[in-house]
Image (tube, rainbow, N blue to C red):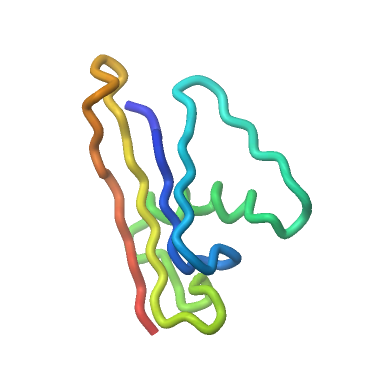
Length: 90
């Protein structure tokens, strides 16, 4: 299995829904400071720990934040699974 997509909704600097498709091989995160690179990487870590989102992770001015990680089966590229989802409401 490999992470094929990450969805962020009102998490830190991502004020609206943001979908990030990932490659099966190598993914590089390049950008200016405060662009969200660390948020994307921390999302993977946060979802490995259940109930790890805090109110501080919700974008300022929003009431709810949500993160999702989608996995694909390496043997069957078309078979997609939504593995981990977590949301938090103020």
